[in-house]
Each structure stands twice: as structure tokens, then as C-alpha cells.
Image 1: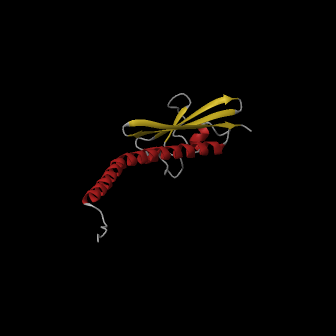
Image 2: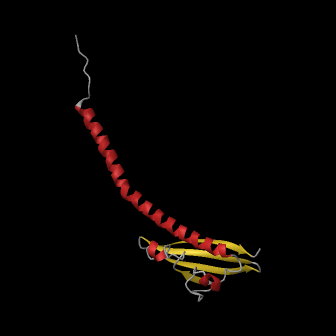
Image 3: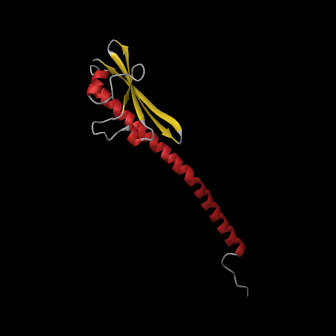
Length: 148
């Protein structure tokens, strides 16, 4: 009478170990790429958050106060002197100086562009620039502020 043998042969065990090692190598090779992608997305999220917070602060002042003088008085831009046409730099998003683009982002800086679009309509655009892996990146968002 023959007994039925149970278990795995040496070839089957070696093949299983080979598949497990191959899977581990693929996973290990993808980790640096995933970490780099996560870090880049984090920088973009921070820049977007800063730009949105600055834009909301400008919008909350309303049409009459969306001028360089009023934005400077509110601490939303650094100077009433433009760095380019209708463009003003900002270093703090809030009065607590916690949301400073240069503190949060590598080589971070911020700009506010104010334009008179129509008689009772102004466009405010906020741009946050930063360096990511030696390349300059930026996030730019804008809104219209109407005199209602």
C-alpha cells in the first residue's frame, strides 16, 4: 500500500522564495520614487494653502480696500512700491508671521497682482514661488472683487 506524500518539494519552496524576494525588490525600488512624489505634493499643497489664505484675506477687505495702501495697512503686502507693474511682494500671510512663504517653502516668496478690470471690478492674483529640487515652481490663483 502506497502512502500519499504531503508537503512541498525543494523546487516549489525555492520558487516561492524567489517570488517573495522579487516582490520585495519591486516594493523597495518604488519607495524612493514614492517619497519624492509625496514631498513634491506636500510643497505644492503648502504653496497652494499660502496663496489661498492670502487671497481670502484680500477678498475679506472688500473692493474699497483692495488697494496697495490698504493692503499695506492690513499687513498683506510688504510695501506700496510695486516690484513690477501692479505687482507687490508679500512675506507674511497673517499678522502672527507664521505663514511666511520663505519660512515654510524652500526659497519661497509671494506676490500680489492688483488690476482694475472694470469700473467696479478689481482682479487680485496671488502667486507663491518656491524651489523644488533645484527647479523654480509656482502656484497662482486669482479672484475678482466687485464693488457691490
